[in-house]
Amino acid sequence: MSGANAIDQSGILFVCHDCDALQRVPAVEPGCDAECIRCGVRLFRNPRGGIDKPLALIIASMILFVIANVYPIMTLTITGVKLTGTITDTAWVFVQQGSPEIAAIVWLPSVLFPGLTIAGLFYVLFSIRFQMNWPHARTILAWISHLLPWGMMDVFLLGILVALVKLVALAEVLLGTGFYAFLILIFLYAATIASLDTHTLWESLKDQSDNRNEFANA
Ligand SMILES: [Zn+2]
Image (cartoon, rainbow, N blue to C red; front, side, top):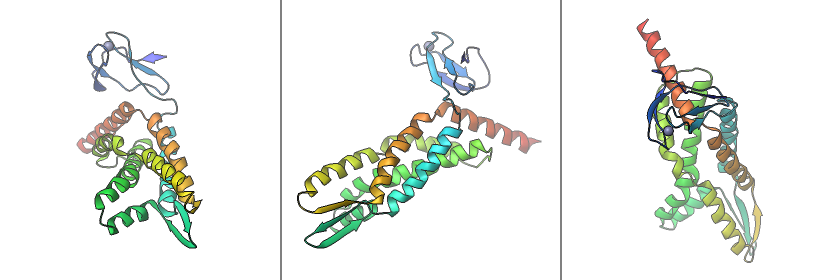
């Protein structure tokens, strides 16, 4: 089924990426498409499963994010000396060695930005799913769209793998729980982002704020 082919005063303004037609697009049912009223191209799709699927994925991502940041990424044994640490420990070593800019390059895109995005998405999705009407959800969703391009856990993982190839010749390397949690987290995080439809989120938050205003005016 495809929907949203009628001009409607509800919904949010949407510009067709093919013909530039500006139109109001109401919320569409899960599993359905919204099409442009002029050229018929698909504007967006409301993924099947609605909010439940991304909410379940983001809860799993939160748990893995905590594990990935609490448990060591790896343990190195060089001439009998054991070195072990989390991602934050690794960044802290750079600070202690007088390279805070490298620490920032490691820590911000692999810990802080993904952490804020995951926490923010949980806040927004939980608020929508259980109609909690939590404050500032729209502001947080706007911030998430700015933060998304800066989360680069996959780049960090690639860095670890390149370092591993060089380290195995010099030291005994034992991958830690944090590494495996981090690996699964990257796939879960990508699946969460793929399952999200920001249009539906904006529409749901708009409905919640409308309901709140009606309640306040009653
Ligand atoms: Zn169009």
